Image (cartoon, rainbow, N blue to C red):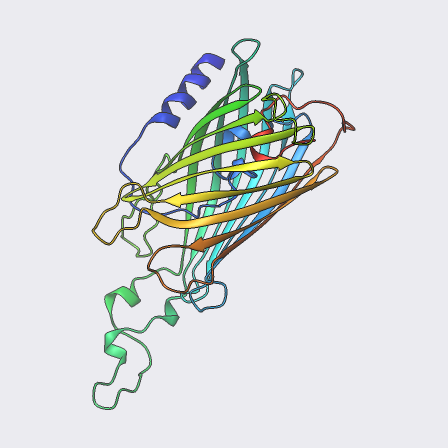
Length: 341
């Protein structure tokens, strides 16, 4: 039974199909990897929870806010399984669009040998999309003589539109990790739920592929004695693809306990037109660890021709709770995203 379950998650995680839409992407995915991959649920020896807030175009009517909150922990006699819950919320000021999704998450750990482990995860949840169509202006509402706006519209799009839709969403993921490195892949929206706002419409939500990796290098072991003890160089990268949209983030950070500071480059490696930008933003980030709490902040500097976006701000807070284990060692590679408890 376990073998069949593992094979199902592996094959569904690595199956790649055509995709057409975009999910919210967080700059601090390395601090909150649960946003990318359900296999990270339950990977610490205690309970783990947190939240992250992202604000784009913060001072304009195009403002988009995204929030992600989660809680998870290990279960089972050998603590080789994980169970968790996550909530994603996204809202747009201009369109009054709002999307909320609640997911239940399960993961299972397999020890391959002394150094390497394999962890598989699956999540399923309920989502609701809301859109205020009363804020839209249709052509038949405009009086062409004097430019005034009339009352309602008889446009079929306005008459047949639903202001909210409900959906079931399923995702899966896999991670392979050792004490210093980790590799992961996930595929969201496996069932491609219908997100059409019209009663008889058929608009499948496109699958979201993510491939991510990280590596932690101890600078003390490299004989660079001018660094303080327990100084690490963190390397991370994440490739994401959904429909014609693609993104590759890569960067590095220096861990000087209790601080982590670094920089990421967000790129568009597969430009679709002559006006496409390879480098879309330079993202600065930092975090500080206070006991079992980690507070992170990032700021994305726009390098494209989109104009003045006022940057993108992201704030995260994560913490460990449960068993008293201030000195016990976590059995997941934690350094690439700052989980140093």
